[in-house]
Figure 1 (cartoon, rainbow, N blue to C red):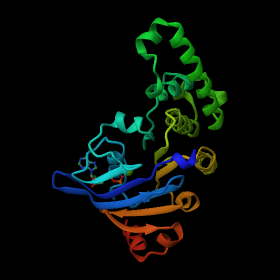
Figure 2 (figure 1 turned 60 degrees about the vertical axis):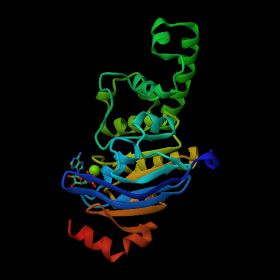
Figure 3 (figure 1 turned 180 degrees about the horizontal axis):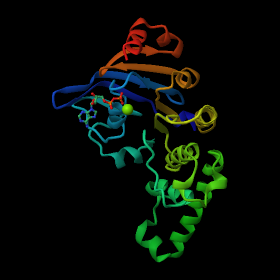
Length: 256
Ligand code: ADP
Ligand code: MG
């Protein structure tokens, strides 16, 4: 439910790699139940920002708080337990596994019975598996891939694979979902369908979304707020309309 969705506060986050400042004191706030886009030219620091939020990279300094709780220094699995799920810029599905099994893997953090009990097919584990399967089918239906559940994920059209990825992230029952370029490589129809799905995730499930996206049309259509990065610095922050007319943003994109 929307009221329980915490706020994400990124404050003064700096990430240094040997000799390079990938993020330079970047801050922004994601309000509950909104779509917040992080945009910027190539190399601006968008993926680095994602990797800090999901615990893959550790910030050199600064803080990230989710519902008042400090995330800095937590490993990725702890962050996902707190209700933050992500997709990757490049597909990260298990190609040989069925869509259904990929989605079941997405429920892993919720599995109580554990791997051993499931392997032995103990009654409690079987009941739990049935509950997870029912939820997986609901989510597949929501994401428009219910008819694909038994197919190997690797054989699906690209647009459907991207939906499976999003659905798999939803299977973890997140309160915040981070999408790294969800429409990259898609044709116009697939883009529109993915945009509809993202709107449904926010409106229907009340999940906040952090969106890294190159396609400005998508950002303008979907985002409630936009943070613009360039060379690791925040150069603008505001509504899509505001940042679109910001001279610094125009300069950054024209210079790309
Ligand atoms: P974006 O996603 O906006 O294109 P990135 O966050 O991938 O930008 O990269 C920002 C800068 O940090 C780039 O100059 C990139 O080369 C550098 N960078 C990213 N990850 C690493 C890393 N693991 N080691 C060294 N440099 C990196
Ligand atoms: Mg990137």
